[in-house]
Length: 520
Image (cartoon, rainbow, N blue to C red; front, side, top):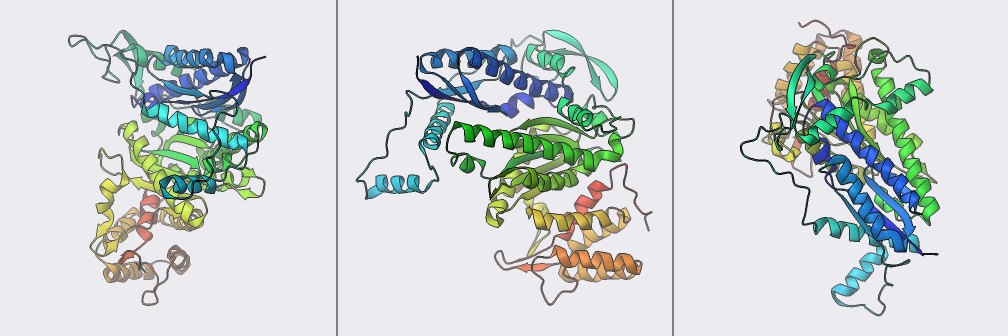
């Protein structure tokens, strides 16, 4: 009987394939085709005598017979190429069972000694964890060394695809844009995604509603314009969520059974947290005839990508993080997550939103690491700007020694912002705009105008918002009351969380179920 070894793989540039074109059918179809590849791969490996340890979200780990590893590797690569035409996967496997060499002994000086000590500090408590870590390093190296990619020749005199603009158009299909049927010439890849999208309409959420007997009457949107149709303004949010330090946690598992159990816990807990959050926040719309205000792109392990109306994004993210911490647990060790939200007009290229959301997620993870909790960051682009990093537009929030934002937020602080958003979203839009402009004028000017406006509000509303403002400021400066601003000693500037709350309130007011007071 052949010895068993580990085989590890990961799909290359998933977002490039899924978000190559911004149409919702293309995104939905691309995501579905990748999930179909996973199902084919699991079946294929089992037929070859292998065993699944983990397979979700574009990544997988199998235990396979050593003498069949190369054939299985080639078969997996061929599955992805045949089914997508352009997506590739990187696969590596061990040379032999227990392949990682033992750590060298007797090295105490120089760089070699430092590397050994650094390795010993990593929590790899057993042979299984060390084998997986070794294989993961080999996978990263293999990805960096790739020299070939699928190629489709595009002749200079051929008509290009009307969606991706990269390849030669081969077939005409009927495409829906804003409820209008159009005829478009598509390349083979885009046509393939288009055909798949007809049967791929967020089956996970439908199953969730059916299993829990929820009164779901709304239907999935056919395109992005329809997805934001019920909103007062057509802003779309790309929500990207991911667990914190999951890699370190996986390195601590003792064996394949624990690895499989933890992976399943992450998958089920993440999916449950997201589906319940979507239902709780979007329930008023989902119980009526119309369209869903969201589209689930992917739920893979602890990883979530979601397109949603901008007005729902913050509430869904907060609810998801709370439920994630409730459902995703491993022994006594708490597991947290972070969220990045990028918001722009529905016509904004989705691939830019995806890249920006990923950048915001990284910033949120830094806060989560410092605070040892879940965290969230967001960025709203009122005007179309082709940016992929939040740092490119930070000057919007910088006015000399003023910094008009306090993001990213730890979950506890984000909940306080949510309470302020709930109140401010019902106030007149003109008042929110006046406060936003006042904050840009400076500490004392803004304080004077906001106190004047609060004095004109009913007593109950005034006391309510003053209490919220007290909570928004993490470091209350005794010279300012209410504490709209605080002095950030680390950066030598005044900061405020009120503008964040005002932006989120402006977005929430775009929801059809939020009623604003009339402008003064």
